[in-house]
Length: 286
Length: 286
Image (cartoon, rainbow over all chains, first blue to last red; front, side):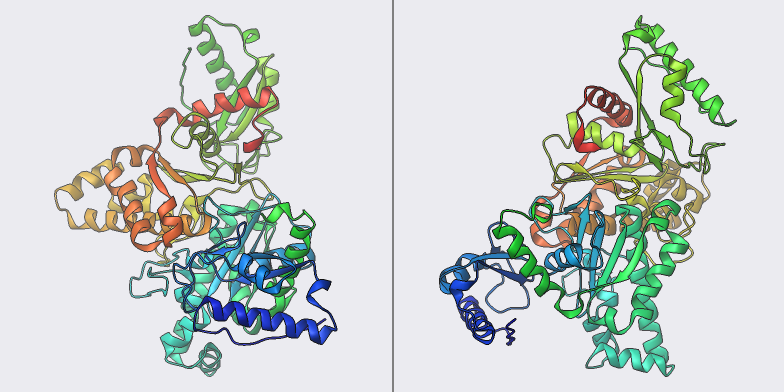
């Protein structure tokens, strides 16, 4: 298997497509393959996007993609000159990965949650990905779970799970370079760090209880770097809150489990999605 | 059409079934019909219940139904001696009513919300009712949207939308006999009433933003007595919050609309559900 990683250009869509094509070529070279050898490619991207048409509607964090309506699947396919390209949101790709070969395998009702730089999600119910009327459903990180208007979120709202519990937000609120420093400070008893982490845990607890009561999933798969490094502050408070506060019947049915596919979950999901969609399958996640 | 209403007995399941049978007979008499004239009956009940088997798992507010696992559909069908009986949760029946002939007709992605004595809901996504792994999904009134542990909910949790915004909770928090008094007091400038209603609006606002971001519905249909009498304090704050705080794409797609079927929404939904299920249809809501 070939692997190639590189930073995302911040000079617009054309540069991003060029970098992606170069990356694909490098990965193929490393694997001793040519473009003609692959039938399909999967692209995991931040949303909102249209996974059916392969158009990125808008993306805050990549220059040139704000309100761009950029047909990235078609452009990539043309420039690669061969494979079909299938696009989906990073969290949807992660859910596809976990649902197909990971921690949600066999479950028809599950939620994928990532607690990382930001907080995102994807919802599968009754064996189908919940998409919504304009294909933007699943943004569980932007469910407001607190009423403090001072807890501002990058999305423009306040009180979002992300505003309390995302790594970037924790670091900014403390004034540290990254969230790991806040967790380390809290471990030494630093009162401000302890309070921020307690608040993050309370937000994740509210989200977990809400997910169980509203969606009644069999599993909540939690990935992302913060969840991976701090399970006692992410998965554990979610489990405790479900046991103590959610309705009994759905609480007994819901398991909070770590991602089985780790940091590569969206890449693996993208490959599985491309394979399934190219072969005419994968209906459950469309 | 025959109509009969009577209070729910609080002396156990047998008495409830007897009252239901008497009520059906009275309604049939009034319409000049016999049991043999009806093919199916629909029963709208509080959850959690199993709508496929017609078993009420547990119900807090009716004596004898706590952890009862009571097969009410089979018992009713036997005692009526004729029609098939189909059971579903009151909010699911309401969603069936609104989705079939009401304010959500034609929408494949919608949420039904009732703001009344309590707060409840039902979710339809991609043309299917979201049920969850044990058929208890949809309890949007028990999504925690605040972190104040003193805002206790009857469900045993805290911070639920219901704890802030339900009529019963508003009345209890103020110390009034019913919520309408609190709204009337607020209209005269009573500071405590104003604060309680502001908090209820903030909870509904958080729920609305969360629903839009997480589920991306085309419509949010809001019923229930509080919504009906106080739309400026229920639907309006939801609309404002969606416009100001939700992600742009799903916010533009989401309309908050009042129930088209009013106080009878669950009864009408139950009749439609019975008709459709008896004829082998209604797959979308199973």
